[in-house]
Structure formats: structure tokens, C-alpha cells
Length: 192
Image (cartoon, rainbow, N blue to C red):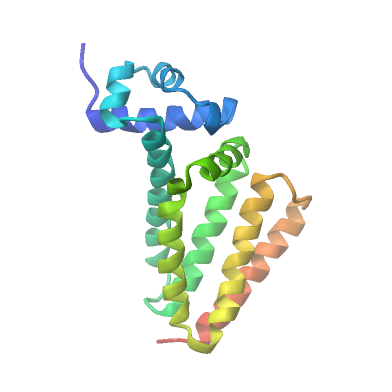
């Protein structure tokens, strides 16, 4: 029998934690359920994540790492300028929203709810938000306009996560196109 590499077990555990969270919510997730879902022993799970809180934090950090990789890939498509960063951010957000439309919102809802009792779950997203704002500030007087564009994507994300938006596919597409257009106009004002 061939053993899978540890990094594969870690990835399976993180995927399993998301699947279990989607079914029962992050607050009700158990290490036993995640281990069973991942096909690892509880000891194997504890090797990678010594507690439920560390597992939940690992899931959030895994999500943030994926978001960062998506952003870095998008940055290769645009100029290395503050405006190019804004366009890359908008592109990565659009891609992320499109990917999330095919999954359910329950896992996101449950992680946000779990963060109420475990505020450290939001450490990585907070650090990311600070760095993001710093990059947008490089647009000088257009900082507020750029921030509005990116906050609109946050609104779409949370609106989807909590099933509060009643947008048709064409309305969603028009909104995203408008945000992309605004980002492109801001980038054009800051060519380098």
C-alpha cells in the first residue's frame, strides 16, 4: 500500500473540513467527522491540526492563500502599477465570485459565525485587508474611488454568502462589467 504524502493529507483534511462545515456548520464541526471525511485517522488529523480552532484557522488561511495565488496570477495580466493592481484585484475577485456561484454559501456563513467566538479566524483576512488598502493608497487622490470598487466586490461576496442578493445573471454581469470599467478608467489615470 502506497502512502500519500503528508501535504496531500493536509489538503484532504482542509477539503474535508469545508465539506463538513457546509453540511453542519463550522461551529458544529467535529475532528472525528473531518477525519472520517478525509479518510485519515484522528491522530493523523491532529498531527496536522492540534485542535479544532487550529483546523478552522487552517481552512481560512488556505482560502486566503488561494485568493493570494489567484491575485498574483491576475497581476501577470496587467501592468505593474497601482492601477494595474486594481485591475488585477477586480479580475481575481470576478473569477472568485464566478467559482463560488457553483457552490453553496453555508460554509462561508458558518465560518463567519464561528469567527464571532474565535476572532483569531479573521487574523489572515485582516492582514490581507490592511495590505490591500496600502496598495490602493498608492493611487493617491483616487484611493477612495478604488476602495469603492473593491468594496462593491465585498458586497457581492457577502450578499451571495448570506443569500441577500436577488440579481439576475444579466444584472450581475452588468454590475461586474461596470466595476471592471471603473477599475480600467482609474488605471488609465495612473499609467506608471
